[in-house]
Length: 134
Image (cartoon, one colour):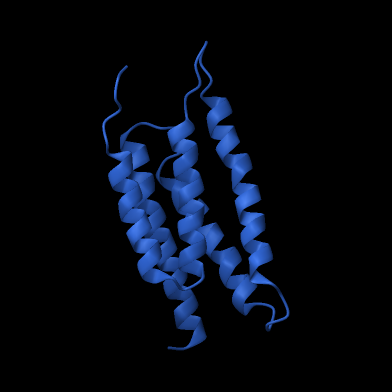
């Protein structure tokens, strides 16, 4: 497979997997939904692809991965802060879905197709578990 086609497949996979998680969040009326999750997954994949293929082997892809993890924390924090209501905090699960979506994009961008797919499926299944009222 040519590198261009491989890169396109990685990006399309990331967009599709982000859409799967985002669709679930959208259906649950959460603050970060379909578009947000697609963009997070796609962006993480693109940063990864660029770090792997874009610098002719003169860059350390692990540095980009570390930057993605740090940067996505700010988006997750925004989801949580937006959800503070009275004496309790909401948005932790959506923030976690943003975090795992970035990891899925990173894996897809690195060419770990099966791993990224399996984690996306597990994530959607976990997000579908009904909340236990205590």
